[in-house]
Length: 424
Image 1 (cartoon, rainbow, N blue to C red):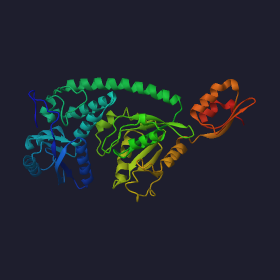
Image 2 (image 1 turned 180 degrees about the vertical axis):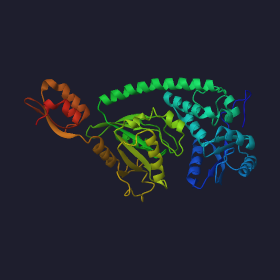
Image 3 (image 1 turned 60 degrees about the horizontal axis):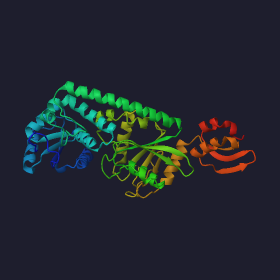
Image 4 (image 1 turned 45 degrees about the vertical axis):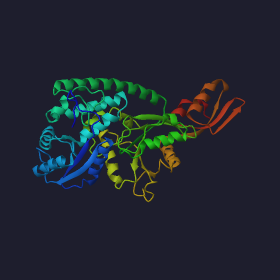
């Protein structure tokens, strides 16, 4: 690893890594493939992968002493400057392995946190990532050793606005308290915004699912359908393309409206510190009227992705929400069948396949209390007609002798609000 004159990590260093995993009997092949994908998302070149089958994880070095020596030789022979473990390591394990192999050592959690630190764009997102990093590092100060005494930079030390981190627990605790205070203020602001939204009576539909399942693509396709390209959210075929929650107003053909929320994607072994840090942002999920659980049906084991997402939903106490399974990317796997899944639908955001069917399902679920009514509104109450027009598109409008006649679909709350103008 290269350093500048001040002993700071050089930001543009090229990382060549060896991935390391340990199995106590389970198949970790997919987990290791995903680790390679995470490394790619962090612009790390993967040179080789090492997996050891063990009865018990080594408390000192995670893998056995023989494998550690083999790893040391691999690093020297292949000129690797980074080792990435597939599981969380303790501070002692980080220090011991790094001392033996003599190259930088990080684990899966550090890698994910680093990706989040690099991708977060909003002030709140950056604070949440920094808090997660500090919560992870606090019990591992000894293991990080020299890494923490250098200016933040490079894989595993990058952080938004991160300053020099000394091995002083009080300094880190003070910074954590500052961040929590700032996040509390942001949470209050969001609560005010949510209260305004609830006052508007607009239902909320949240997109949840495994990372890279196509949530942002679905949102953008629905926005494009309305010719609202200026409201598009960032999307890319890579892990963790979306980190900041995005909210967009979707207007249906009959003028019904709902708020669509795009959220951060989940991943196997998502760090608890990250889940905790992002709980404030993910509150949008807990208050949603409907969860669209997006699943990549081109993946070989969709049940695995479904399980991981539902596990996080349970942690967020959102597992009691109404859920619609949306199997995306059927253009990549046209043979896929959702017959064994309850409450599911097949779509392709890329090709636009079955999007009308999806909108129909959303309408059926979030506008379930809508009933067609006939109304007669006096001409001097033209403001009421305008309010109705904003939330629903009348099926019939007639200007009669004693007022404006409307045949329109209204929800229970609106029916109660304008009951005196509804014809029995």
